[in-house]
Image 1 (spheres, rainbow, N blue to C red):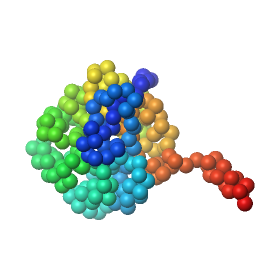
Image 2: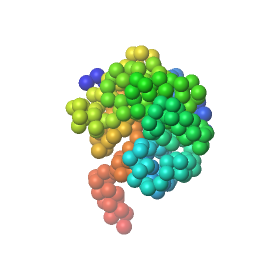
Image 3: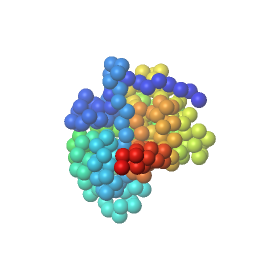
Image 4: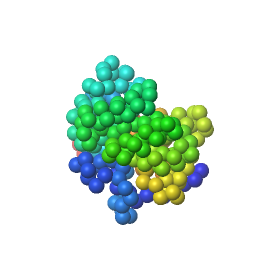
Length: 246
């Protein structure tokens, strides 16, 4: 597996969104790099809990997550933005044609200007659309990336971030963490400005593995987000300290 060092890039777009974390900025002097953790959910309740933690940079959604809410995406996305307060909420384009997806992109971006990112499934046709949307100043992510050659073209198209599905890639291809490492290496050697936002996790070890493999950022469901801060031995130590202090 190819291992790469973290690139010294800030997760903000020069504080464009008025937040400590922001999203996916350009290369910055070494030492300013800051990883960001995103919530992968369309649940307003999950978003509210994540926002209370204070360190969640944004939210990623997808059509399945939105469908589970039983509500229209046009209602959910702005509400998630309002609950989050700062940072980006990513919406995945679903319209059947390129022309319709382009209109869909601008419609959703206008719901909360500067706070809605667009997830665009990675195909050659869609990357041409991504290029146009990026040139319009919209924040764009190439999602469902399962190969290094897709990542290479996404970089060329100007994707702000590239989203590989770690657990799914492991199940279908054999090694999702190797995919993350290879994508990160391609971005590095080509001098690209895209950042790797790893998704699709089933365990905290996968999350940490993705960061070690070179992911700039990760997006995780609420249960994993909460699990990242816990460990049975920490609970044991806390109980022992409490007992000793009585």
